[in-house]
Image 1 (spheres, rainbow, N blue to C red):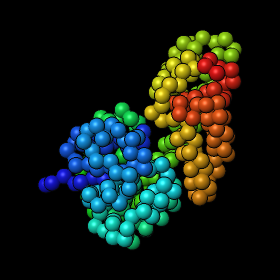
Image 2: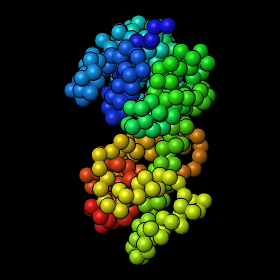
Image 3: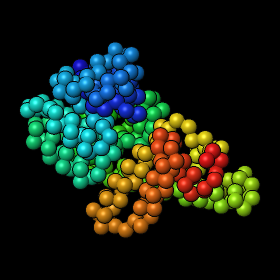
Image 4: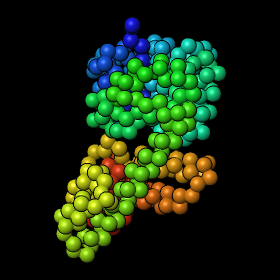
Length: 293
């Protein structure tokens, strides 16, 4: 069977490696990015990069949306002519609210297309190697089946987790854990360091306990050195996701009073010029005067 023609709409940090992975898996790929020069890696591999979404959509039967937020998605859809989506499959892979995804599903279906959400866990290396963890929310099994070959190129075992909105909720649930765990570890690490406890002693005990999470070791070196480098998942993106989680928690009538505090800490790190640094730079807001600050 002929591989689906894929239009990648959005070529940011994750979009480009995902597009390259789809190419490697044998899918014909075209792309859209408002600033064409930012899709240079794809262009270097022969991908046509358009600066108007309608041109990319016209060449494809499956659309992969990796735009920054629901507002950007809506703006791109607004640029499409009537009938542009008819018969196509739209896979929304960015992090947005469950309610936003459900509203988007209604809009896309009204335009004659299939819709599912498929947010991911993983970053640039996983996208490049096809090892993303994919959480697909689809109201119909047929929508998931249609999209599965594309999804399987990006992650070996894409999961149909439930209806539209449930994939989006899972993504926010996991990103809330990323923020909360990183902040909690930052505070504990900062406390023992300020009291002169050897970091190795702290980590040895932590690793032997039920409290340990592998992410602590992944971020430890950055926090100790104060070098938060070039990010696969930057402060500004986690800040956006924490704020989305605040709204999702409110919509679900839950209580998460620490979420505004996490957002404030990430905002402080961003104000220190660390918006594009690894999200573990939240440490600098929790531990003032830490190395590198």
